[in-house]
Image (cartoon, rainbow, N blue to C red; front, top):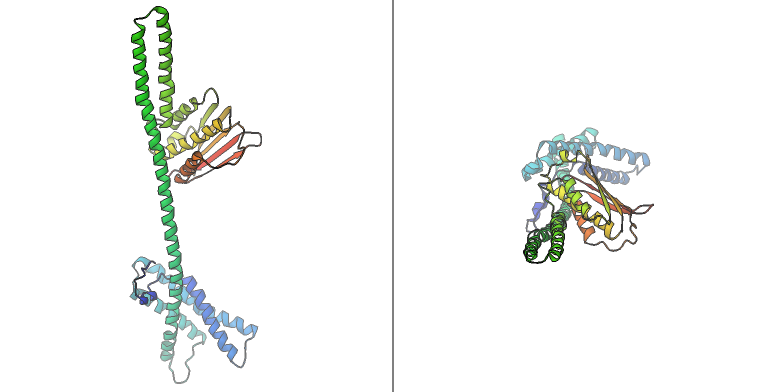
Length: 366
């Protein structure tokens, strides 16, 4: 329960959320302590058997208080509890505490007091005690609630920063992809057309040389530029993960053979509408394959993607040099960590005994 600092002091009385277990335990210790103090001041003094009896007898009224508060909490929604209802709840709990003590003979009428008067006096003593116990518990919980709220705020801010990092990365990739697809590819097409026009007015030998150069430019445009554009920013809304990863694998041939092994049922279980899960999986695999080629100098790399009850299971294994030194995590590790966190998962990377590196990631569907 949150309260601003400008609230009047009497608001400390309540209403606080009812805490049956804590209130019962504290009341038990409080009542047993008072009874033990009275017993020590008597002629009998404290004996192990008498102390045990004091705590056993105090447990019954304390249990009555806790059970009463529990039943009230179950029947009255905490969100709608107001101070009058809260005070009545505490009053009724204290009443049950006093009734049990009367039944045990701990509050027998003394002197000229009648049973009703003894009950009233006991209520006037016990209601403030229960209110005090509830206030102490409420204030302690209030500090905890504030800490939890601050933690949640910090976590939300961290997640927002993660989302911004991923958005910025995807935005840059999209811009570079658009540049390759539109301007670079258009420039290559224009150059090919100009060379073809120039070849028409030359001799046969020169024309053959120019035609060969045009063909190489066409291959570059059709394969390398277009593939690089799709790898930078795959259109997973209109293609499946298998095709996008095969396009990525093609970028590393012939220096490294990348084999893609995807669960055949994956497409039917995770639709393309879950673009965040698909894009995150692609980015995580992309970074692992890049590390295998650049840092591990691998010749072979195996990518597996499986559907598990918790979500997706990804593994990327290579036959490279392994993790030679821990080093400082770079942007690739940061992106992998961010993607797995955003998708409710975890990831790890380790060197294999026989050589090579294994990267595993477990992702949720969120």
